[in-house]
Image (cartoon, rainbow, N blue to C red; front, top):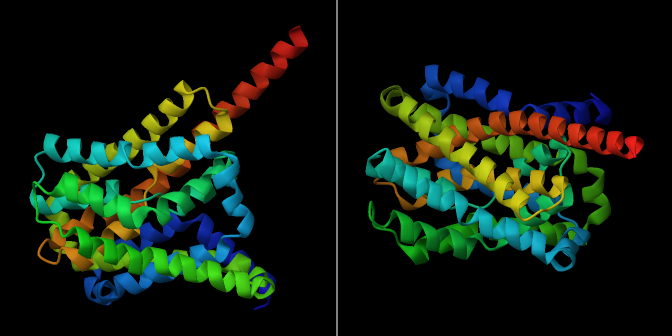
Length: 325
């Protein structure tokens, strides 16, 4: 198989990650013993995904932090307010047990996921802004995520703030910075492999989720519908509020799309890893993150189609008005 064929396979897998997650999750549900072993390597898989993300970050990606601070600030504030608070309200409103409430809040307090950049591209949104928001929320996650979990989940479980901070630093910040450093040292070599890098994240995320599904197959039967409902509402609220607030601030449509997607799509792999590493006494806390990983790729794709159609319609009316004038 030559390099072009390998690139096509990688692009296909990256573009169809939601389908792959569903296929492997179904397989893990019916054959749990074949996948449950992956939970022992959740931190390693997430670290690999974050390392892959770091390898794709170029120096110019950081320029947006300094050239477009207003847009990034809007996205950052919405990221760490809308999703955490929505998670807390849903956990209270549905009367979730401690494990599930913790899992939902963990998802809500995580930074944006790397899949948001791909979905933003598909939606015709502002990709540089999406990348910039992901970078900023990820780099600040070692502080923001543990503090928010401590404040919001403390009424359900005991949260060790320092331990969580160290977990996020180890599985997110260190791998990302290492990836950035290696790219700085070997830019030509990494650029030659750039089309293959997303495959690292795809494989890592698929293995994390299928492992969680395999380990919780019996529990999914009893509470899967409830978690699915809460996760779907959580995600849709994030997409809608992110979009709505960006519109109220009269941002350009491409920026609106990027912010809406970034707010609604979380790094649920991090939520799973944090639940595994810090809350072993609450095994079901990993379930919301696993289901969110499946759902937000599906809803994100649907949202992208809606936004692309909306922007096309806006462009059509703008041209029509100009011609009429």
